[in-house]
Length: 560
Ligand code: F6P
Image (cartoon, rainbow, N blue to C red):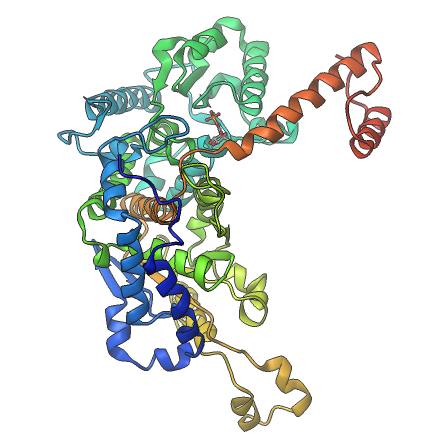
């Protein structure tokens, strides 16, 4: 195995980029944007998508240098190792093969020498059959009624991806039509308020609960699963669980122990990372129950199209590669610690929360894949809101405060067009006017001279000046069907992987989430013993002791 990139900041390519920052600091996007050849070279098209990264603080030379960095980091080799099923998630000794989840039936993708695509399709076929039974009403609940509502219980990767796709499809005409009369809800938080919200208005007789957990040990998910099992059995008796609860997991033994019939369990594999699992049964089952398998299959096909592009396109024309390199440029060289994800589409309102996990859980690391401290910071702070809502919220900071590279995502054809007679433009054109305007406002800004010409009073000129030179990129999709949603997902998944490959970290483990879970276990034990035996608080620092005391003395939680 080729040695990894623990010292990616050593090679010439890295140092070259470090030196190049000084050149870029002398440029302004206002000027860079006048060079049509440069702009043309920064447009990339693939399968209906158009990427325009001409508003990055980069020249043609910068891109060349980034491509050199990719070579120094052995990016192409690392991508191949991922597709070849090598154990690139070395700290968990696992392959990283979410691409196999959306591969065509005749593809061959091997993990540990075995083609996994037939297993993937066995589960997909099982989901297709099961979801058709539920949707057609041939599978009924304990009292003979069809199950028209689904609550999917899961958290993190077993929640955010499916929620993003569900939200994106809710208003797609085809998906909308096939979801008529059905509801899909997500129960993630252990806050009992989330349970109350989920079951509000639902009848256990007509509800199917899908417990989604890779490990089937996640505290929140298991307690929520027990809570909804109680909700079902209290209304319908213990035997109703067989008809009203199914599971998605890699741990089928624990599924059975929980009391769910293993025939009603949908498997996936340890080579699927939680945050990369939306194309497994984690997403495909709940989404197929809601929209039908044929719609979800289109989503898988869209993701697969990007997988093929990512695997086989030379790096200089490879969309996820270019996006990943530009993010490395922004974070590691220009020093911008955040990234705003700004879809001009309400249907994509849950995209940023999903990418937050994909990106920040993957690349928020402090050591190289070999365990050596990194001489630079990795990952970025991802956040976002759909436009135009974000414009009325945090864009002030983006325009005149901190510099935050922005991803603008636009859709050519609205899922739900509205044209009002007498209006200047359609509602979607109104939305898209903002999509086109904002990147230029960021790039060009407004100078004091321009303001003077507009007779703005002197005292207001500093307040109304926009420095400009704020980077963004624009991604334009033809429409937002299930297929396009799959494309968008895969682009971001691979972009995150590219960043991690270049930084030389393991983007596929998540040890950083463990410590808090362990400490919560201590607190849980203490709460139990204090409430049941009046045990005094022990082993906590002054601050936690004070807070816990106040909590125990003033709360009205029932004694267990
Ligand atoms: O928060 C940590 C994490 O392990 C995520 O990586 C994962 O997506 C989530 O918990 C849920 O895990 P599981 O699917 O095993 O319940």
